[in-house]
Image: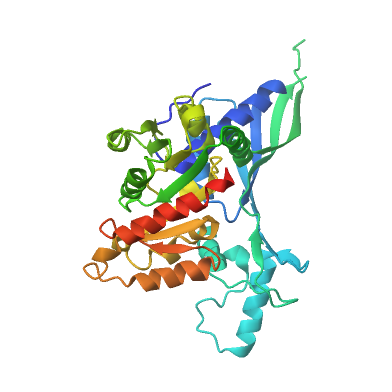
Length: 160
Length: 225
């Protein structure tokens, strides 16, 4: 089922890829309706989930996936050091902020220590502009992962 | 008696990685480059940053010694490809039509028009954009990001990922830095902050030495193929 690709945004073509995969799996499983889809989206992938969902809705119109709920599970990147230290970037950011907050009065700008509440774009620029120092050995740590776009599960209804 | 059709709901584990499909194709492209001794460079940067000019200048200095091909990515039009053809090299216009980036599939298709047996260097000029190309490997050996001073000196920190994931950065059009009120060293400092190991080159089309350094960079990395 080739959908007309008229829009010119990154998310639209990703939505088309997702749609085609969902349709393939649905056909293979004899699905009548696609009820929901769960996506894993890396927090460092250049994907705006709202735009992606909006695009998917448009692509899925008139198909068995029309109106399907799309759940998004954000995937945190990791902070990794050669010394063996590894932690999720979310935790790293929270810890770093906490320790900074201890010493400094804080301007209130980044006072919110719960990274799940900041939007993805803020998260990306905050994290990638941070100097990542390994808390275990002090060396510069690497940022790994968090760039995924994975169709995790598809919830279908079929007649057996 | 009516027949009841039993509707059964079930969850299917898919685990399909959308980006991985691109990654696999990129590996295929890379194997093709390696098998034929082709050195492939992906040139990324914003619209008007000077990607085409920098490739042109490199071609002028390299074409006597190497066989060169170019894939010119654009949403529509083949103006860039025509500019490269004028220099006597093979140029393929890869029109993405709707996309803000090249992906491994578009490159794979463009590759069918290139004679690998007779190519040493392949320039892949990405679509003008500092965001979308980041997530798409093409199979290239080197990822180069071009940023011009006319984009403003806060452009680097606004687009951290492209500077974090590139192998080489060029700050271009430095000759007009004063006119656009930008200090190139600020941009250099920001790139360095985001990626402490990336080599950075300040370039201008009108500065032969800087273009020579850009060409030197290409030649010194050709053993990656």
